[in-house]
Length: 428
Ligand SMILES: [Zn+2]
Image (tube, rainbow, N blue to C red; front, top):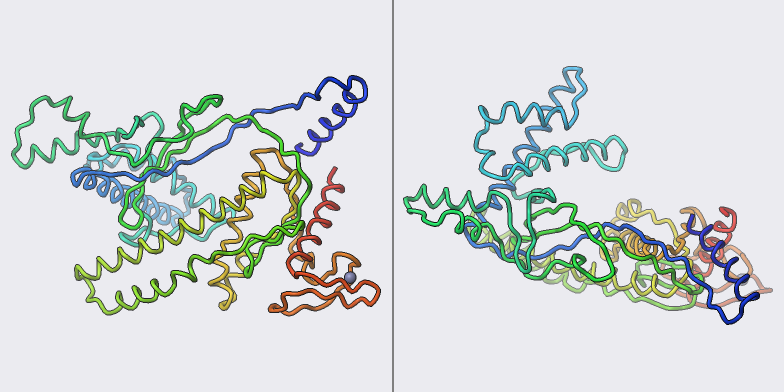
Protein backbone atom coordinates (compact mmCIF):
# COMPACT_ATOMS: atom_id res chain seq x y z
CA UNK A 1 0.00 0.00 0.00
CA UNK A 2 2.91 2.30 0.81
CA UNK A 3 4.45 1.93 -2.62
CA UNK A 4 1.11 2.44 -4.35
CA UNK A 5 0.59 5.52 -2.28
CA UNK A 6 3.97 6.81 -3.35
CA UNK A 7 3.29 6.20 -7.01
CA UNK A 8 -0.04 8.00 -6.73
CA UNK A 9 1.73 10.91 -5.12
CA UNK A 10 4.47 11.16 -7.73
CA UNK A 11 1.98 10.99 -10.62
CA UNK A 12 -0.04 13.89 -9.23
CA UNK A 13 3.19 15.75 -8.61
CA UNK A 14 4.27 15.56 -12.25
CA UNK A 15 0.86 16.67 -13.44
CA UNK A 16 0.73 19.64 -11.16
CA UNK A 17 4.27 20.75 -11.96
CA UNK A 18 3.65 20.69 -15.72
CA UNK A 19 0.27 22.42 -15.55
CA UNK A 20 0.81 25.00 -12.83
CA UNK A 21 4.46 25.58 -12.23
CA UNK A 22 3.92 28.10 -9.44
CA UNK A 23 1.76 25.82 -7.33
CA UNK A 24 3.67 23.56 -4.99
CA UNK A 25 2.51 19.94 -5.09
CA UNK A 26 0.47 19.03 -2.03
CA UNK A 27 1.81 16.04 -0.17
CA UNK A 28 -0.76 13.65 1.14
CA UNK A 29 -0.11 13.44 4.86
CA UNK A 30 -1.79 10.52 6.51
CA UNK A 31 -2.22 10.17 10.24
CA UNK A 32 -0.97 6.94 11.76
CA UNK A 33 -1.74 5.41 15.10
CA UNK A 34 1.39 4.03 16.72
CA UNK A 35 1.89 2.34 20.04
CA UNK A 36 4.74 3.80 22.02
CA UNK A 37 6.11 2.87 25.38
CA UNK A 38 7.80 5.07 27.92
CA UNK A 39 9.72 3.37 30.69
CA UNK A 40 10.17 5.56 33.74
CA UNK A 41 12.18 4.83 36.85
CA UNK A 42 10.09 4.73 40.05
CA UNK A 43 11.23 5.94 43.44
CA UNK A 44 9.02 4.03 45.88
CA UNK A 45 9.32 4.32 49.66
CA UNK A 46 10.10 1.16 51.64
CA UNK A 47 6.37 0.69 52.40
CA UNK A 48 5.44 1.15 48.77
CA UNK A 49 8.14 -1.25 47.65
CA UNK A 50 6.63 -3.93 49.92
CA UNK A 51 3.36 -3.55 48.00
CA UNK A 52 5.09 -3.76 44.62
CA UNK A 53 6.86 -6.93 45.71
CA UNK A 54 3.60 -8.39 46.96
CA UNK A 55 1.87 -7.59 43.67
CA UNK A 56 4.69 -9.24 41.68
CA UNK A 57 4.54 -12.29 43.95
CA UNK A 58 0.77 -12.52 43.55
CA UNK A 59 1.07 -12.31 39.80
CA UNK A 60 3.70 -15.08 39.85
CA UNK A 61 1.44 -17.25 42.02
CA UNK A 62 -1.60 -16.76 39.78
CA UNK A 63 0.36 -17.38 36.59
CA UNK A 64 1.77 -20.61 38.04
CA UNK A 65 -1.67 -21.67 39.29
CA UNK A 66 -3.08 -21.07 35.81
CA UNK A 67 -0.28 -22.99 34.11
CA UNK A 68 -0.61 -25.98 36.45
CA UNK A 69 -4.38 -26.01 35.99
CA UNK A 70 -3.98 -25.74 32.22
CA UNK A 71 -1.68 -28.75 32.21
CA UNK A 72 -4.05 -30.74 34.43
CA UNK A 73 -7.08 -29.96 32.27
CA UNK A 74 -5.18 -30.66 29.07
CA UNK A 75 -4.04 -34.05 30.41
CA UNK A 76 -7.67 -34.80 31.30
CA UNK A 77 -8.64 -34.27 27.67
CA UNK A 78 -10.27 -30.87 28.17
CA UNK A 79 -9.61 -27.71 26.18
CA UNK A 80 -8.35 -25.08 28.61
CA UNK A 81 -8.44 -21.37 27.87
CA UNK A 82 -7.04 -18.40 29.76
CA UNK A 83 -10.47 -16.78 30.03
CA UNK A 84 -12.17 -19.89 31.46
CA UNK A 85 -9.30 -20.37 33.90
CA UNK A 86 -9.67 -16.78 35.08
CA UNK A 87 -13.35 -17.35 35.81
CA UNK A 88 -12.50 -20.55 37.64
CA UNK A 89 -9.84 -18.80 39.70
CA UNK A 90 -12.12 -15.90 40.62
CA UNK A 91 -14.67 -18.43 41.85
CA UNK A 92 -12.15 -20.09 44.15
CA UNK A 93 -10.30 -16.96 45.14
CA UNK A 94 -12.25 -16.01 48.25
CA UNK A 95 -11.98 -19.43 49.85
CA UNK A 96 -8.58 -20.65 48.69
CA UNK A 97 -6.35 -17.61 48.32
CA UNK A 98 -7.99 -14.59 49.98
CA UNK A 99 -4.61 -12.88 50.35
CA UNK A 100 -4.68 -12.14 46.61
CA UNK A 101 -7.24 -9.42 47.48
CA UNK A 102 -4.47 -7.41 49.12
CA UNK A 103 -3.37 -6.14 45.74
CA UNK A 104 -5.19 -4.64 42.75
CA UNK A 105 -7.35 -6.96 40.64
CA UNK A 106 -5.33 -5.84 37.60
CA UNK A 107 -2.77 -8.38 38.77
CA UNK A 108 -5.25 -11.22 38.16
CA UNK A 109 -6.26 -9.84 34.76
CA UNK A 110 -2.63 -9.39 33.75
CA UNK A 111 -1.53 -12.85 34.90
CA UNK A 112 -4.19 -14.66 32.85
CA UNK A 113 -3.56 -12.34 29.92
CA UNK A 114 0.12 -13.30 30.03
CA UNK A 115 -0.77 -16.98 30.27
CA UNK A 116 -3.03 -16.71 27.22
CA UNK A 117 -0.32 -14.88 25.27
CA UNK A 118 2.34 -17.39 26.32
CA UNK A 119 0.23 -20.25 24.92
CA UNK A 120 -0.70 -18.28 21.79
CA UNK A 121 3.01 -17.71 21.13
CA UNK A 122 3.73 -21.36 21.77
CA UNK A 123 1.01 -22.54 19.37
CA UNK A 124 2.21 -20.09 16.71
CA UNK A 125 5.76 -21.47 17.20
CA UNK A 126 7.08 -18.07 18.20
CA UNK A 127 8.12 -19.35 21.62
CA UNK A 128 8.71 -22.51 23.62
CA UNK A 129 6.26 -24.13 26.02
CA UNK A 130 5.33 -21.74 28.91
CA UNK A 131 7.46 -22.20 32.00
CA UNK A 132 6.63 -21.79 35.66
CA UNK A 133 7.83 -18.50 37.09
CA UNK A 134 10.48 -18.76 39.76
CA UNK A 135 11.15 -16.14 42.37
CA UNK A 136 14.31 -14.25 41.54
CA UNK A 137 14.72 -16.04 38.20
CA UNK A 138 11.95 -14.68 36.02
CA UNK A 139 11.21 -11.03 35.51
CA UNK A 140 9.13 -9.60 38.32
CA UNK A 141 6.27 -7.49 37.00
CA UNK A 142 2.55 -6.84 37.07
CA UNK A 143 0.05 -5.12 34.86
CA UNK A 144 -2.13 -2.04 35.41
CA UNK A 145 -5.25 -1.50 33.27
CA UNK A 146 -5.57 1.96 31.74
CA UNK A 147 -8.61 2.95 33.82
CA UNK A 148 -7.05 1.87 37.11
CA UNK A 149 -4.12 4.26 37.46
CA UNK A 150 -3.47 7.96 37.07
CA UNK A 151 -0.22 9.51 35.94
CA UNK A 152 0.44 13.00 37.20
CA UNK A 153 3.27 15.44 36.83
CA UNK A 154 5.88 13.40 38.65
CA UNK A 155 3.81 10.67 40.22
CA UNK A 156 1.69 7.65 39.48
CA UNK A 157 -1.34 6.67 41.54
CA UNK A 158 -1.21 2.88 41.93
CA UNK A 159 -4.55 1.19 42.76
CA UNK A 160 -5.02 -0.30 46.26
CA UNK A 161 -1.53 0.84 47.29
CA UNK A 162 -2.77 3.45 49.80
CA UNK A 163 -5.18 0.96 51.38
CA UNK A 164 -2.49 -1.66 51.65
CA UNK A 165 -0.12 0.62 53.57
CA UNK A 166 -2.83 1.94 55.88
CA UNK A 167 -3.86 -1.62 56.77
CA UNK A 168 -0.26 -2.52 57.52
CA UNK A 169 0.15 0.55 59.71
CA UNK A 170 -3.06 -0.21 61.56
CA UNK A 171 -1.95 -3.80 62.07
CA UNK A 172 1.19 -2.50 63.77
CA UNK A 173 -0.98 -0.47 66.16
CA UNK A 174 -0.88 2.98 64.58
CA UNK A 175 -4.03 5.10 64.86
CA UNK A 176 -4.99 6.60 61.50
CA UNK A 177 -6.73 9.96 61.20
CA UNK A 178 -7.67 11.74 57.95
CA UNK A 179 -7.85 8.37 56.25
CA UNK A 180 -8.85 9.41 52.71
CA UNK A 181 -6.21 12.11 52.53
CA UNK A 182 -3.49 9.78 53.75
CA UNK A 183 -4.62 7.06 51.38
CA UNK A 184 -4.26 9.38 48.43
CA UNK A 185 -0.82 10.54 49.54
CA UNK A 186 0.52 7.05 50.21
CA UNK A 187 -0.85 5.71 46.94
CA UNK A 188 1.32 8.00 44.86
CA UNK A 189 4.75 6.74 43.80
CA UNK A 190 7.37 9.23 42.73
CA UNK A 191 8.41 9.18 39.07
CA UNK A 192 11.93 10.06 37.95
CA UNK A 193 10.63 11.97 34.92
CA UNK A 194 7.46 13.20 33.30
CA UNK A 195 5.48 10.90 31.02
CA UNK A 196 6.26 11.54 27.37
CA UNK A 197 3.83 11.48 24.39
CA UNK A 198 0.86 12.68 26.45
CA UNK A 199 -0.18 16.28 26.06
CA UNK A 200 2.28 17.04 23.25
CA UNK A 201 0.84 19.63 20.91
CA UNK A 202 -0.27 18.46 17.48
CA UNK A 203 -0.80 14.85 18.51
CA UNK A 204 -3.64 12.93 20.08
CA UNK A 205 -2.70 10.27 22.56
CA UNK A 206 -4.36 7.71 24.76
CA UNK A 207 -2.87 5.69 27.61
CA UNK A 208 -3.45 1.99 26.88
CA UNK A 209 -2.05 0.41 30.01
CA UNK A 210 1.10 0.06 32.04
CA UNK A 211 3.42 -2.48 33.57
CA UNK A 212 5.40 -2.12 36.76
CA UNK A 213 8.55 -4.19 36.79
CA UNK A 214 11.69 -4.71 38.81
CA UNK A 215 14.97 -4.83 36.97
CA UNK A 216 18.37 -5.09 38.64
CA UNK A 217 16.76 -4.06 41.93
CA UNK A 218 15.24 -0.92 40.44
CA UNK A 219 11.54 -0.33 39.85
CA UNK A 220 10.14 0.93 36.58
CA UNK A 221 6.78 2.00 35.22
CA UNK A 222 6.35 1.26 31.55
CA UNK A 223 3.38 3.11 30.06
CA UNK A 224 1.95 2.13 26.69
CA UNK A 225 0.54 5.09 24.84
CA UNK A 226 -1.33 5.06 21.52
CA UNK A 227 -0.28 8.19 19.67
CA UNK A 228 -1.71 9.56 16.46
CA UNK A 229 1.12 11.11 14.55
CA UNK A 230 1.20 12.59 11.06
CA UNK A 231 3.17 10.39 8.71
CA UNK A 232 5.77 12.62 7.11
CA UNK A 233 7.35 10.88 4.13
CA UNK A 234 11.13 11.06 3.77
CA UNK A 235 12.33 12.33 0.43
CA UNK A 236 15.63 10.60 -0.03
CA UNK A 237 17.61 8.17 -2.15
CA UNK A 238 17.21 4.41 -1.82
CA UNK A 239 19.73 2.62 0.37
CA UNK A 240 20.98 -0.91 0.96
CA UNK A 241 22.20 -1.91 4.41
CA UNK A 242 24.64 -4.63 5.35
CA UNK A 243 24.56 -5.54 9.05
CA UNK A 244 27.60 -7.19 10.52
CA UNK A 245 29.68 -8.19 13.50
CA UNK A 246 32.82 -6.27 12.65
CA UNK A 247 31.00 -3.12 11.66
CA UNK A 248 27.46 -2.67 12.89
CA UNK A 249 26.04 -1.30 9.64
CA UNK A 250 27.49 -0.40 6.25
CA UNK A 251 25.28 1.50 3.83
CA UNK A 252 25.49 1.31 0.05
CA UNK A 253 26.60 4.97 -0.09
CA UNK A 254 29.56 3.99 2.12
CA UNK A 255 28.21 5.51 5.33
CA UNK A 256 29.61 3.41 8.15
CA UNK A 257 28.34 2.82 11.68
CA UNK A 258 30.98 1.26 13.89
CA UNK A 259 30.00 -1.23 16.55
CA UNK A 260 30.74 0.16 19.98
CA UNK A 261 30.61 -3.34 21.44
CA UNK A 262 29.49 -2.30 24.90
CA UNK A 263 29.60 -5.86 26.16
CA UNK A 264 33.17 -6.52 25.04
CA UNK A 265 34.21 -3.28 26.62
CA UNK A 266 32.65 -4.04 29.99
CA UNK A 267 33.30 -7.75 29.79
CA UNK A 268 36.30 -7.58 32.10
CA UNK A 269 34.01 -6.14 34.78
CA UNK A 270 31.37 -8.80 34.14
CA UNK A 271 34.03 -11.53 34.47
CA UNK A 272 35.37 -10.06 37.67
CA UNK A 273 31.92 -9.88 39.26
CA UNK A 274 31.09 -13.40 38.14
CA UNK A 275 34.25 -14.63 39.88
CA UNK A 276 33.32 -12.71 43.00
CA UNK A 277 29.85 -14.18 42.93
CA UNK A 278 31.21 -17.71 42.73
CA UNK A 279 33.34 -17.08 45.83
CA UNK A 280 30.49 -15.75 47.95
CA UNK A 281 28.65 -18.06 50.30
CA UNK A 282 25.20 -19.06 49.12
CA UNK A 283 22.45 -17.24 50.96
CA UNK A 284 24.82 -14.61 52.35
CA UNK A 285 24.25 -10.84 52.27
CA UNK A 286 27.45 -10.29 50.31
CA UNK A 287 26.32 -12.69 47.64
CA UNK A 288 23.11 -10.72 47.25
CA UNK A 289 25.10 -7.51 46.97
CA UNK A 290 27.38 -8.92 44.28
CA UNK A 291 24.39 -10.35 42.45
CA UNK A 292 22.77 -6.94 42.36
CA UNK A 293 25.97 -5.29 41.17
CA UNK A 294 26.20 -7.79 38.35
CA UNK A 295 22.55 -7.27 37.42
CA UNK A 296 23.06 -3.50 37.33
CA UNK A 297 26.12 -3.87 35.13
CA UNK A 298 24.13 -6.04 32.72
CA UNK A 299 21.35 -3.48 32.80
CA UNK A 300 23.80 -0.72 31.96
CA UNK A 301 25.19 -2.72 29.05
CA UNK A 302 21.65 -3.28 27.76
CA UNK A 303 20.90 0.43 27.92
CA UNK A 304 24.12 1.40 26.16
CA UNK A 305 23.47 -1.10 23.40
CA UNK A 306 19.86 -0.08 22.94
CA UNK A 307 20.76 3.59 22.83
CA UNK A 308 23.26 2.99 20.04
CA UNK A 309 20.80 0.88 18.04
CA UNK A 310 18.05 3.49 18.31
CA UNK A 311 20.38 6.26 17.19
CA UNK A 312 21.67 4.33 14.18
CA UNK A 313 18.14 3.33 13.15
CA UNK A 314 16.97 6.93 13.54
CA UNK A 315 19.77 8.35 11.41
CA UNK A 316 19.12 5.85 8.64
CA UNK A 317 15.35 6.28 8.54
CA UNK A 318 15.52 10.09 8.56
CA UNK A 319 17.71 10.13 5.46
CA UNK A 320 16.50 7.56 2.96
CA UNK A 321 13.26 7.03 1.04
CA UNK A 322 13.67 3.29 0.42
CA UNK A 323 15.49 0.72 2.52
CA UNK A 324 16.87 -2.67 1.48
CA UNK A 325 17.67 -5.03 4.37
CA UNK A 326 18.96 -8.56 4.54
CA UNK A 327 17.03 -11.25 6.41
CA UNK A 328 19.12 -12.28 9.35
CA UNK A 329 19.32 -15.75 10.75
CA UNK A 330 19.75 -14.59 14.34
CA UNK A 331 19.07 -17.99 15.87
CA UNK A 332 21.69 -19.60 13.65
CA UNK A 333 24.16 -16.90 14.60
CA UNK A 334 23.61 -17.42 18.31
CA UNK A 335 24.09 -21.15 17.89
CA UNK A 336 27.67 -20.92 16.64
CA UNK A 337 29.62 -20.38 19.83
CA UNK A 338 32.47 -18.23 18.64
CA UNK A 339 30.05 -15.75 17.16
CA UNK A 340 27.40 -15.86 19.87
CA UNK A 341 29.05 -13.16 21.93
CA UNK A 342 29.44 -10.71 19.07
CA UNK A 343 25.93 -11.48 17.90
CA UNK A 344 24.35 -10.70 21.23
CA UNK A 345 26.62 -7.70 21.49
CA UNK A 346 25.62 -6.16 18.23
CA UNK A 347 21.99 -7.28 18.58
CA UNK A 348 21.61 -7.13 14.82
CA UNK A 349 18.10 -8.50 14.84
CA UNK A 350 16.96 -5.72 17.11
CA UNK A 351 18.60 -3.09 14.93
CA UNK A 352 16.76 -4.45 11.89
CA UNK A 353 13.53 -4.34 13.89
CA UNK A 354 14.12 -0.72 14.96
CA UNK A 355 14.87 0.29 11.37
CA UNK A 356 11.61 -1.33 10.23
CA UNK A 357 9.43 0.29 12.89
CA UNK A 358 10.99 3.72 12.49
CA UNK A 359 10.66 3.47 8.70
CA UNK A 360 7.00 2.52 9.13
CA UNK A 361 6.40 5.76 10.99
CA UNK A 362 7.41 7.62 7.83
CA UNK A 363 5.72 5.21 5.44
CA UNK A 364 9.12 4.39 3.97
CA UNK A 365 9.09 1.00 2.20
CA UNK A 366 11.50 -1.58 3.63
CA UNK A 367 12.34 -4.47 1.34
CA UNK A 368 13.81 -7.59 2.88
CA UNK A 369 16.25 -9.61 0.79
CA UNK A 370 16.07 -13.41 1.15
CA UNK A 371 18.35 -15.21 3.55
CA UNK A 372 19.96 -17.24 0.78
CA UNK A 373 20.82 -14.27 -1.40
CA UNK A 374 24.64 -14.27 -1.61
CA UNK A 375 25.33 -10.65 -0.87
CA UNK A 376 28.90 -11.23 0.35
CA UNK A 377 30.06 -13.59 -2.39
CA UNK A 378 28.79 -11.63 -5.39
CA UNK A 379 30.60 -8.72 -6.99
CA UNK A 380 28.06 -5.92 -7.16
CA UNK A 381 29.46 -4.62 -10.45
CA UNK A 382 29.71 -7.74 -12.61
CA UNK A 383 27.79 -10.36 -10.52
CA UNK A 384 30.81 -12.67 -10.58
CA UNK A 385 30.69 -15.07 -7.61
CA UNK A 386 33.64 -16.04 -5.45
CA UNK A 387 34.27 -17.62 -2.06
CA UNK A 388 35.34 -15.14 0.60
CA UNK A 389 36.75 -16.03 4.03
CA UNK A 390 35.20 -14.49 7.14
CA UNK A 391 38.28 -12.47 8.05
CA UNK A 392 38.82 -11.02 4.55
CA UNK A 393 37.82 -7.39 4.91
CA UNK A 394 38.50 -6.41 1.28
CA UNK A 395 36.56 -7.76 -1.65
CA UNK A 396 38.64 -8.34 -4.77
CA UNK A 397 36.68 -9.32 -7.86
CA UNK A 398 38.37 -12.25 -9.66
CA UNK A 399 36.68 -11.50 -12.95
CA UNK A 400 39.58 -10.12 -15.11
CA UNK A 401 37.14 -7.95 -17.06
CA UNK A 402 36.00 -6.21 -13.86
CA UNK A 403 38.59 -6.41 -11.05
CA UNK A 404 36.62 -4.24 -8.58
CA UNK A 405 38.42 -3.82 -5.27
CA UNK A 406 36.78 -2.36 -2.20
CA UNK A 407 35.32 -2.82 1.25
CA UNK A 408 33.66 -6.19 1.74
CA UNK A 409 30.60 -4.82 3.55
CA UNK A 410 30.17 -1.99 1.04
CA UNK A 411 30.03 -4.59 -1.74
CA UNK A 412 27.39 -6.51 0.23
CA UNK A 413 25.34 -3.35 0.85
CA UNK A 414 25.39 -2.51 -2.86
CA UNK A 415 24.25 -6.05 -3.68
CA UNK A 416 21.46 -5.81 -1.13
CA UNK A 417 20.29 -2.50 -2.60
CA UNK A 418 20.20 -3.91 -6.13
CA UNK A 419 18.33 -7.05 -5.06
CA UNK A 420 15.90 -5.09 -2.87
CA UNK A 421 15.05 -2.73 -5.73
CA UNK A 422 14.54 -5.71 -8.05
CA UNK A 423 12.20 -7.42 -5.54
CA UNK A 424 10.30 -4.17 -4.91
CA UNK A 425 9.73 -3.67 -8.64
CA UNK A 426 8.35 -7.22 -8.90
CA UNK A 427 5.94 -6.59 -6.05
CA UNK A 428 4.30 -3.56 -7.72
ZN1 LIG B 1 33.33 -7.75 -10.57
